[in-house]
Image (cartoon, rainbow, N blue to C red):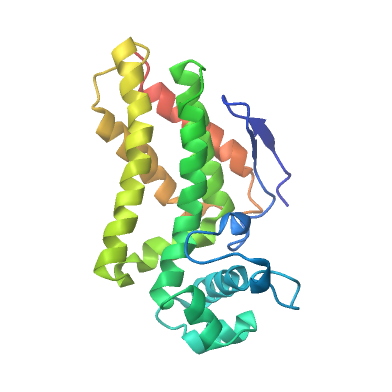
Amino acid sequence: MVSRATGRCASGKILRGTPRARRGTAVEEGWGSVGPTRRDARTASGGRPVPRRLLAAATRLFADQGYDRTSVQEIVEAAGVTKGALYHYFGSKDDLLHEIYARVLRVQQERLDAVAASSAPVAERLRAAAVDVAVTTIENLDDTKIFFQSMHRLGPEKYRQVRAERRRYHERFRALIEEGQREGVFSGATPADLVVDYHFGSLHHLSSWYRPDGALTPREVGEHLADLLLRALRP
């Protein structure tokens, strides 16, 4: 089994690799944009809020059998709730698909914003951001894999929304590169947009080769990818 690895980013926040890329669990506590999380949403089944149970069940089923082959009835049965409860928090199955990815992206955006706003040198901030997005992607590998395989199933409005959310993240990441290029810390020979595509392209392939029982922890993968990024930007 992969051992737990721990590191600290430039903003002082602890970044943790986990021993296993778990299904939809790493950011469950961050749920909160789609519906209420009041105490009356809790049930006797482990005391977990209904939205969290629905998201966990949907993530598990989408990962095991695919989005298209998973019915709403299967999701509510796996979550131990009624269809009425699902439609109270999520208007449709594609709302669940959107939230599976959106909750990961919210965590990544919050952490990137914190790193980018710190007073550390720009190279340290970019490195911390590059490591963090790799670690959080691996920690939620099923979530991101499900989304990229099925995002075309979203309705037009949700599709535009998630693209806008991803663009905001990429633009904040790109701004760190541009800052370093202006200061002469990074080479300006390669356009910042292309550098961003280079780094995130490698992240999108993680689900095809990363294995929890492999030789590298999530943190080590992030460190290697960040090193490659910074070498590509060396003046």
